[in-house]
Image 1 (cartoon, rainbow, N blue to C red):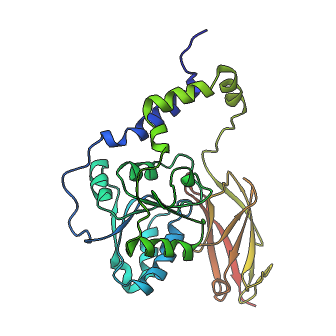
Image 2 (image 1 turned 90 degrees about the horizontal axis):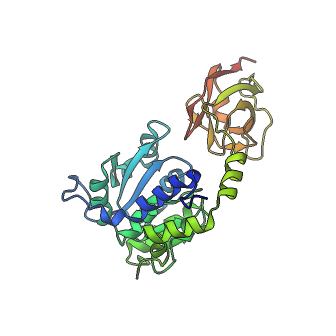
Image 3 (image 1 turned 120 degrees about the horizontal axis):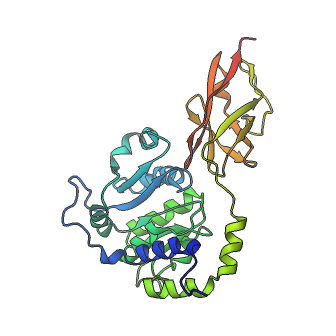
Length: 319
């Protein structure tokens, strides 16, 4: 029998080697112009899954106590123009966040090395390479509990951990760093386990041909697109809610195909609080103010991996 690792785990070996060898890739020698003198940094994918909605909300709390607090954000936007939505919410403080967009790794690393902390408030993660990169460069990480980040960050020695989806706790952690409590004394011990040879040996030892084949048999095929099928209800009279919930919002039910945990209902251009009921069923809360004007409103689904669905129309009719 061959002793080479099964093909199903070879991509994992490659990923671990790349992530753990980050410090072998030198940072650039230049930084973008206009960076603040002090800043915390977010790097990665902008979207609900990576916690940037929570981060955007928490900044309003931070600025109430520290008006000069600054951040630098770098990464990829989805949905499109999400950063502009954050800027509108931030109002006069929007310029305290510098948006770099997608930049090369050497440039990203140079900016990251100057940060006082990386703020990575993911709601879900598996192998959080942004956190690994930050820790490898000696940058403390503000991460979330129960999202794999707590497997990397040791509170008080390599950063801070807060509950996911908690703007108040996240704001408090950022304020502590800004005021000097970085939470850093040494790199986390797990970084030693991510050295290429150590990680590869451990993975091969754990994996066998039989378990790999079983995983391949049980693996489901991910959908390639998301399809919006029906709205329940498909309309209402102007000013009249439906399936009204505590707080006044109306509950819209969605039949669909290919939905995921991070699929969001977009109602007339507005992302709505969305609850995942399975690949074929979602519910969303429609605020009262969106039902105060007659018209035919567009409903879509937006997914951070699959993109946008087709559109259906929700009718707000005269009484």
